[in-house]
Length: 147
Image 1: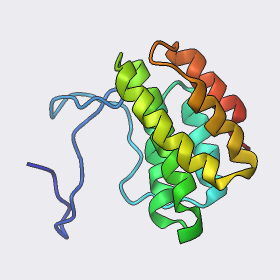
Image 2 (image 1 turned 180 degrees about the horizontal axis):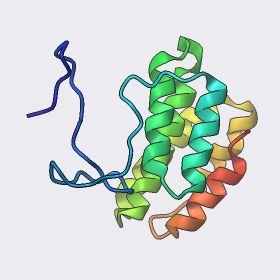
Image 3 (image 1 turned 180 degrees about the vertical axis):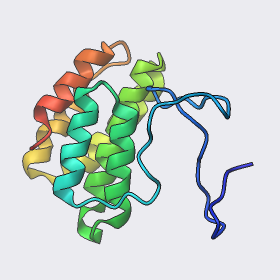
Image 4 (image 1 turned 90 degrees about the vertical axis):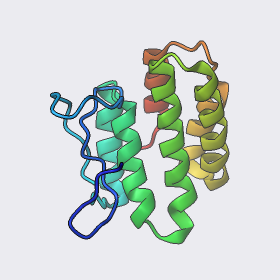
């Protein structure tokens, strides 16, 4: 059963490891992005870049998902695409290359549809393979992610 807040909204209070994998209740986990995180575009990019630099794409995904949920309609595809690319990076870290490819393709399509400075991020994601080194893949995405 999923955790719920006092208003009955679904929340996930279960601790997670650095790769975003759920841990048993009561286990020490790494700090999470709050469920109510609603960043500006600039803050989402800064926080997402920081988590990627720390090798934590699952947390970067949570940041970009937070922005996607509060962004204006015309930005939502971009933020969803960035979140999906970060989930793909998380799959690479967890050894799920096939899942990574699926998320890279979905995310790249959304990001590239936004064009501009994010096109390069989509191109890099499209070029990653199921056997890509996770650390190198994260570094490549981080290098192309605008400031």
